[in-house]
Length: 101
Image (tube, rainbow, N blue to C red; front, side, top):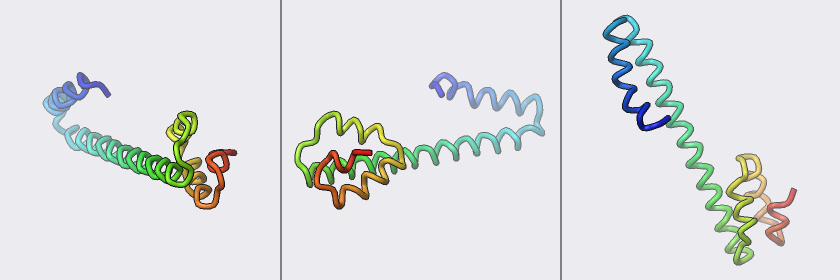
């Protein structure tokens, strides 16, 4: 969503309500639902970034300096891969053992 569309949002909502007052509840429910979805997505991304940071710290503490390619691998990992990596780091004897398939 662009900043222009964010600014246009309240104007659009007020125009809809002015021309169809009965639509106010529908519009407000939709706005709240979109806000909640945005909050949930933000929380999910925040948790994912925290898990990435934790994994990178664990890798550095256990194995020392981490190659940029390995950092990129961690930063590009989805939730499922991060979960696997976080489990593997506990018993692995190398970064490759953590990040390998």
